Image 1 (cartoon, helix red, strand yellow):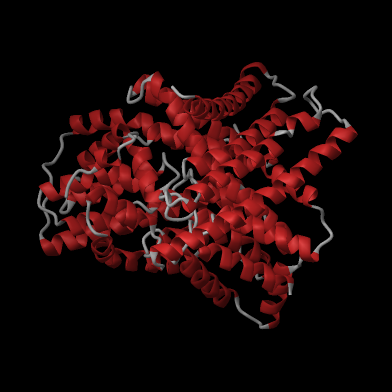
Image 2 (cartoon, rainbow over the protein chains, first blue to last red):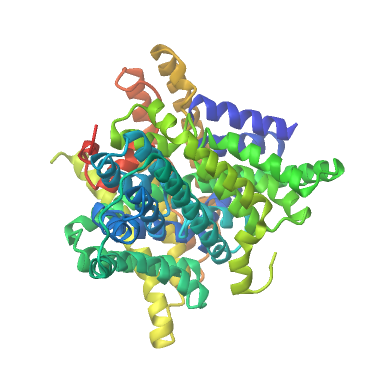
Length: 430
Length: 185
């Protein structure tokens, strides 16, 4: 009864267009008031305690770091470096664009930001040297999804906080899949370029390569600070995020001089806007999670699935389908906050590694960003190119098939995700 | 500058300052630990309350600048009259939420006040540090009432959700005018 009321209420509220945060909060409050003895004051305390989670404190810091370095200037330097390295290959500019997306994803924790920053520069460039706009846009829309798979990733922090897994491990687990996906996209472009005879760029000299590398290195250093710091046990992910934010500030204002000191307050306000939007959803989702656990819903589901004798691989198909459908309608963090607490206990029971499950979640969310009606990357690409949404969808669906194949690979070869964290931090810790 | 825009500036400045304070505090903690083998005992708790104030004060700000996201794919299929009615219903629901949380915050603060305990490492009573709860939800209530008025008078076509694509483009461009990033058509 409680379960039905909770979910019916949530979905009705969501589809009416209630802000996700309030839909989660109001459905939880209603169920508590109707069926549970808790007072509202105790729920407010639960809400407030969300901010006490140090893991979540990484979110504002990573957003801030990203905002300092997600300027056109940084994107341009990364593109220059990528073009000087791989631009001479067939389809070189497109391959370099994917490479630039990988670099940029290592600075920014957001996929749409990657599409905007890289796309607004390279799409026009590709069209100029003779690619079709549709090809150029398709590449960027999909390459941009790397934003949430390549650490640092906000979506991963949310997953870690929801399931109480380690952010450091999850970040490490994202590295190989992100590189693999980037390489797969590049190979696909190379093959298409060979068939269609796509243009190459003039080969850059080693001096040019060194110069563009030296120019791009300050941005790329961010991921080394974060990953190196966590790997070396120098700081916690949250501290790494704060250090990254301070570093990003110094790099943007004093090294690159893309921003003046006068721009800093605006970066701070913009970052707090995004932080608050996410945290309001997260705090309400924690109320929702509290109701779920009080009503024993995840446990009931786990019991039902185990009684149905579902094998882990079958269970993962179900999880993937749920996530793919949800990804068509909602923002990644919100989906993780709602779905993860429900499926997590079952997954653990079936012996699925929590970190591996996290990567599966993230890859599903990437696909959600490029599928209509709510695929944010599509909208953003349409915004920066002026192409109608339908054309962007047509431009990107072939690449989407690659992403789906990649999802299957990630789902059924856990080693791709787990190799790095297990080698670095030692065997699996639940 | 009108009082209204002055207050808006104040709101943004407070949020920016809290954001900066949290970052610097955490950064300094790391520096102190490695450089001087020390640290502030109160840093963890201070960060919690700073974060709390940032989020609670920011909720209402988020309503003003249309930062909160939702699923509007279905509502948009309705004719404009229907969108407005649904918008009013959603604002009413949001107001219900704000009232419940405001009431709960009040009750919670009242309990803390009666207990009169201090925070663990900061020499201030906990109810004072937690005042962001009632203040935040009261401000949310105010912003929602404003929005209800805008929808009722036809100035808004429905509940004002974020246009995420638009925001992403504007943030990266660092410009109020998103068209600045349009490079080809």
